[in-house]
Length: 308
Image 1 (cartoon, rainbow, N blue to C red):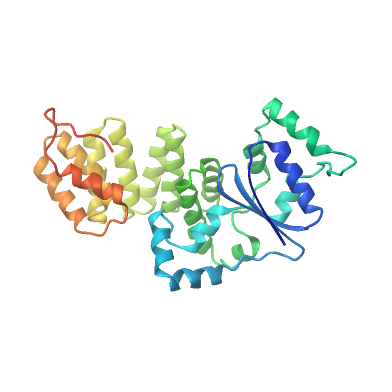
Image 2 (cartoon, helix red, strand yellow):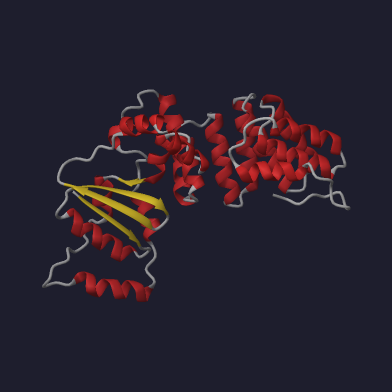
């Protein structure tokens, strides 16, 4: 078995390394901690990630669990899905027709400088073209029901948001939208992608569909309300944020945005009531807790608080 870590954004160099490794280790898995930061695992035997072992370790070690939750991962599945990039078959497609490096045919020595000179940075696009699986096949096959697969994909996509791998998150949620066009959680996540792409109308449409699909799904109201707030539609945004808080009282982010609008509208008493309710609940995100506590402070002279 071999482990190779490298940070590189040049497609030609990347594929040359992989085709060389694959010539010796036929079973390969590519992991990624963030864009352009890779860990390749090569083996002479098939590779099967042991999700059950990871889950048992996660459950048995509170310090690990606490550290993971601080960066937004509440399950080993989310971590595995976020870091998993390509299967053996996908790597073979990516490296197809790439010449093998030999001492008497120094492909790497010539290709690498040319790649750097030409600024060959097409790798993320190439990866997205060959990627079709979002979990190792042995784990994906364990989710036998449709809803289990939908939940797993949403968990992975939300992890991709956290590590800012937005291109891969976009592809995953587009796939998920085809798989589950009326799943509220999937629709909200698709809407989040649209916002990052600057497609606010499509985002509003996705959040509205999520509400129609599941009128009790609070996150759909929160995200639609936050979208309207950023557009300056304060009263419209507030109405959705309050509907979300009716369904999920004390939600920290929904409470924060609702309080900001209320203070902007000089409804300070109601804003403080909402914040006080939120602060009574555990909030692992220290930055979010600090933002809520800051909103308890008196408003600025113009009645507008700082945005968070």
